Length: 253
Image (cartoon, helix red, strand yellow):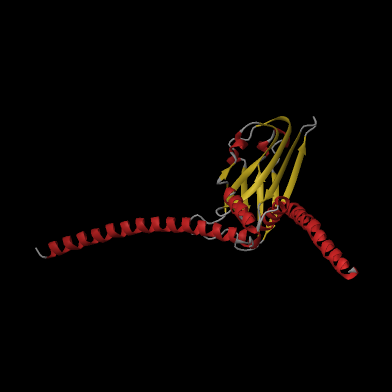
């Protein structure tokens, strides 16, 4: 009987330890990912006003850590986790764009950031890209705190090839005009990114569903381009026939 009770105690201890440690491990992974992919810049003026900007690059590592943290807190099943992850990835347009979450705090004179797309740019290696979209609230005057997402292209618009296909450096540049506290000093946030950091190592069915969605849209675009080219080819063939017929007519006079 003693051995049975001892075995039960050991089993209960192992179960309780794993129940307690799992959320702690998930939280630790999230903190590590947040530390790696979030960067903060703060500027102050002589009157005590300040402007703080925190930029978080949504990478596979960060998203996976965030999802696991949420799953542990909410006790989700694997299916629930994958559904949440898919909807989250769709919500940030991860299948088409590079998403960067911005958190701002303006303590001092009002910041006027409109049009916001002219305030930010992303350098992928040596190439500069303008934002494809952003939270419209960034166009509103700012006093206090605000957060939202700004998006940049993930794929070459013409070829469909990924822009992050090898190790590279991402540099987010925010113009100094975004806040009077900056006194026209640019803010720069730099990340060294592997291709798999960006999207390739997101696991589970959510990533597969997201890739299928992207490929379907790419196929629709290619089919539309194909139809246009076929119409152009048909017009050229018709013109060639008309030119050939006219040449023959003239030669037979």
